[in-house]
Image (cartoon, rainbow, N blue to C red; front, side, top):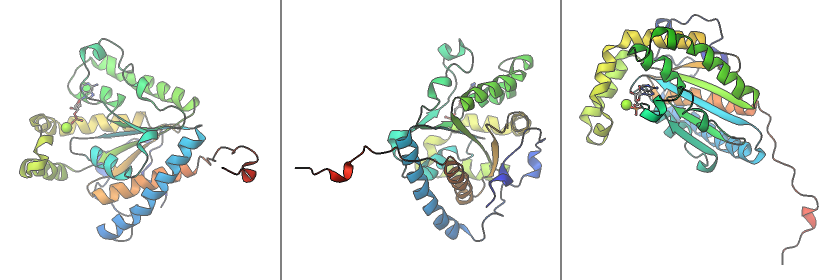
Length: 269
Ligand code: AMP
Ligand code: MG
């Protein structure tokens, strides 16, 4: 599969109506085969993460953004199934607290970026500050509009300091969101996930589309590219993201650290 297909280059003008949320063109076969094909990728990711941790040189940051019920939680559960929790941390960004709001919007984000040898997954991120904040007019346009430049500069700094950044926008259709929200109502053990606020956000579908399009168009750099992942089919979403992660980590050419000399002669008594 070519990673490039779903990757956006800086300068691309993104029109999400041209991106099919049901696309599965990079996999010949259906759901069952797709799930099966993802399993060895999971195992590979597990091994690569161990190597990342052992080498302790690179830092890896994965950013997930999507609409409500877009599959961020499911992606984390499935794609990172099996990786050692010791080297992976997940940061979920909720509505900012009053302390967070009293600072600049990157203040709460920076402490969660990965250290050497670590992988950090952002479940929502600093991009909420050009998404929900824009759609709900939480700050004036003049204020959120200049944030694209701040964010690019922030990510450039992280990249210069050794961070590999991968950003995924999980692209679902309005129909699929309806089905997933309905399932949260219908299935007793999913009800805890239902929030009436999600219905209010759903009414703002078009405004969010514009906000996502501009975010994708303005902040997909070569050092921190966005990928638009067709996400109506969960198995395909997991397959594609796993492929991109494995390919990217393999590209880092990581090595286990040199062991001490003379280990062959050691006899433990
Ligand atoms: P959830 O991911 O379902 O737990 O919901 C988290 C909520 O926090 C979402 O409605 C987000 O839009 C909201 N949120 C996250 N970051 C911000 C932010 N910077 N400003 C306002 N709301 C935010
Ligand atoms: Mg929610």
